[in-house]
Length: 295
Image (cartoon, rainbow, N blue to C red; front, side, top):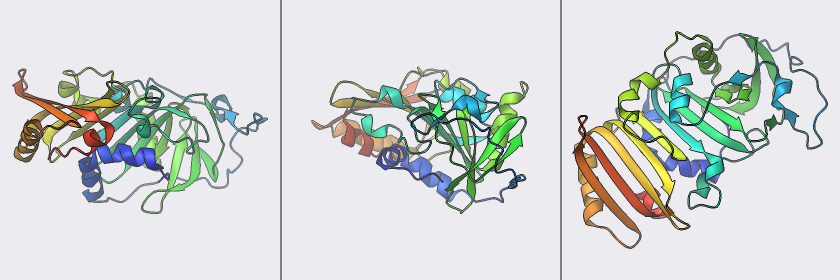
C-alpha cells in the first residue's frame, strides 16, 4: 500500500473502528489480471514539464467522473463497500482540520480530493483528484484495460502485492481487480455501485462537509455516517448520524454529553425522523474531538 504520513494516519484514527473491521475481515484470494509486464514503454512518450511532472493528458484515456462527495465515490465503487471515507483536502488548509490534508508524495503533486473504500474480502480502492492535473510518472510496467492505461506502481499493499493505477479525474488506485471493477462500474450505465446500500441514510444528511465517512455493520450502528467541520480557528465539529445505534455507543454518547469539559461538548438526540436516527454533535479542539470514543 502507499506509505502514508501523519496526516493520513490522523484520518484513519478518526474511524478507528472502521480500520479494525477492515483488518479483521477474512482475506480472500485476489484475482489479478495479466500484468503485461513486457509493455514497460506503453506510457506515451512526452516532454516532461520543468518540474519533472507530466500532464494527466499524457496518460492516454482518462477517468472522467465527479468526486465532490462521498456519494460520488460510492457511485463509482462496485458493491458492496463496507465503509468509505472522503476528504476535500483543499478546504482544510488553515483550519483546525489541517492535519487531515493529503500528503503530496503519492503522485508527486497535491491531492485536492480523495476517497477510500474497503470491502469484505480485505481489498480497498482509492480515488484522488490532482489539483494541478500533473503527476510524476512512476511505474514499473503498464498494460491496458478497456482502453485505459493501467500502471503497475512501485508501492505494495500489506500483503506484498503491487498496486495499480489508472489516471484521470479522479485517478483510481488499488488492487488490480478492484481498479478494473471501478472501470466496469463507470463504463456500464446499468451497473450498480455501492451508493444504493447507503442511500436511505445519506439522503438524511448534508453532503457539504470536507471530511465524510460511512460504514455498515459496525460496533457503533447498523449504518453510520460521520462528518467533520471547522467551526473557527480553534474548534471543530464531529457530527454523527446513524441507524440502529448499538447499546455501547448509546452509553458512550450519553457519557460524553454528561461529562463535558472546556475542551469538548456533546449534544445527542435519539429517535429522530422516521428512520429513528441518532444524531450526535461533538465539538471542541481538534485533539479532543478526534480522540472522543463513541463505542
